[in-house]
Amino acid sequence: MPPVKLIAVFAACLALLAADSPSAGHFLLTERGSSSDLEIAGMAAAVAPGTVRYISYERLLTLPQTTVTVTGDDNFRELPQKLTVTGVYLDVLQTSLGALPDANLLIALCSDGYRATYPREYVKTHRPILALKIDGLPVETWVAETHNDDPGTYFITHQDFTPSFSVLSFQEIPKIPAKVTRLEFATAQQVYGAIAPHPRDATNPQVIDGFRIAQQHCYRCHNMGSYGGTKAGRSWQTLGTFAASSPSTFERYLRNPKSIDPKSAMPPNPQIDEPTAKAIQTYFQTFATTTTTPH
Image (tube, rainbow, N blue to C red; front, side, top):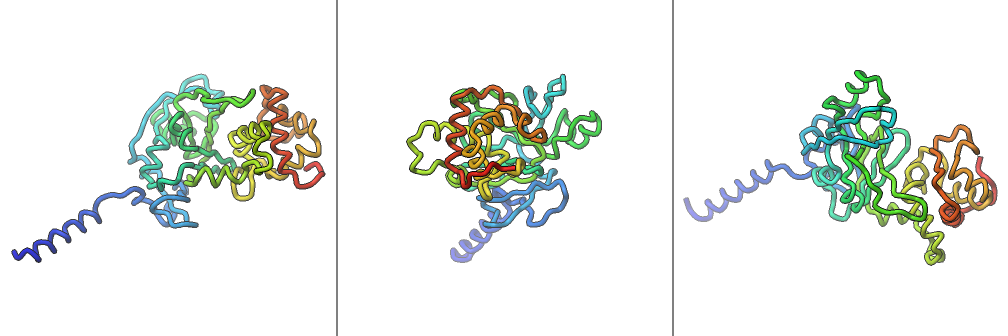
């Protein structure tokens, strides 16, 4: 065979191999095929900006799995026994779904408006797992057989959790969202930047401590525009106004929300001491927009 034809055939073979070889995220779907499909959005190779892709439960089961014994997960605190959970480590999932190199933050969005943010350092330190099975059963089957509360088709947990830092009396808490419906790849600079202190407050240690606590804790249920959670129904500016107009009530709310609002879904935080409460309050006051207390 002439050299030119040989080269052409060789090039064609390489092209076929490239077409057949799996690439990260190649299995994402453009349309939902089932109500159990997990939504994928943000900075991923197979996801165009502003669009949503889907991955089925069955496809997730084909990714590298891990099985661990879970203890201390508050989603299952009423269960006396330990749970065996099978799922995919978030760092493995990020690679499998083709997260872009600059995507250093993973966001888990839940059906109730809760959002958990996972910076790269958190994922590396705590190895969170997207759970797919409990005690060898799909979550829906496990719930039906055990009559326990339903954490949804997808939830995120840890084999165990040891806080890696503290700010005043606040210790790092595990990020264990239930009823996860979407995973979104983003940057920490963009998402946390939305609630970062104003440059004029950047040298105030109380504001900085309050920010570090708020981005870990408050951001799960409270939003700044399109960032953060919406479960609480109170925005960052609303909290700022509350902190500025009623400081003592705001502090009481931090420690014992139901003492102020009996319908509040926010858990109590009795461990918050005075310096910690002051730091959170001082930080949020920088976002105040009015002088009236929210209702």
